[in-house]
Image 1 (cartoon, helix red, strand yellow):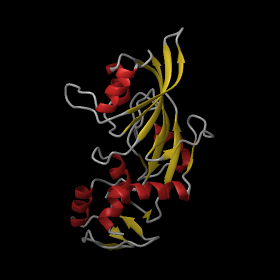
Image 2 (cartoon, helix red, strand yellow; image 1 turned 45 degrees about the horizontal axis):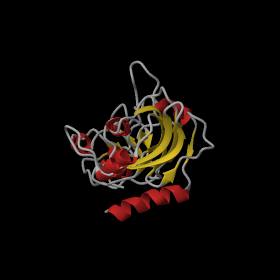
Image 3 (cartoon, helix red, strand yellow; image 1 turned 90 degrees about the vertical axis):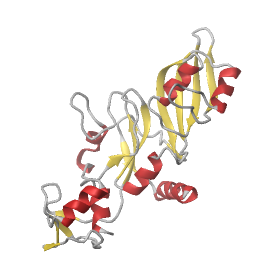
Length: 244
């Protein structure tokens, strides 16, 4: 793998930042200074030259984790006031691993964490129409008109949403609440909450159950994670190939 691509994929900076770092002569591979960004690094090579990279041993095998994100945890590498999802990895946490997209602090459910930078970029690109499915408990019961508006796309001040699919799974008419599944393809900030509000409902609980065709392993308790199976990672790669 190219040196600049490897460093960028493993969290040592953006592609442009690591190119500058390499060109400055600050990066060594197996004891030799390398100034060529296209230099191919092999499995087991040792990269040195910065505090972050000092003694870093190259592994070209990508890692993919599925996590059941709990409420109250921030989708970030660090936060001044709240626990973050990366801390839940414990001893498996290492440079280069990053969450794919984000879930709000109060949202639970499926979160993919990987060091595959290209896949991460693809899955979070707003142009790619990657499906994301959520289970929500709503304060309110959507009517047919509201469901139809979601399918057509709702106009907000700054954008018009892409079509969203809402399926009602349970209704409590006495309490005036409903359980629904909502599938979206964008990932705008607070998207599901804003869509629900636009049809007269407030989100009381939100959990992502599917991302890019991958279903949440319900055997994972909130805060638990596991390595994704080969079948699951193949499904992600097929999603990339399909949309290229």
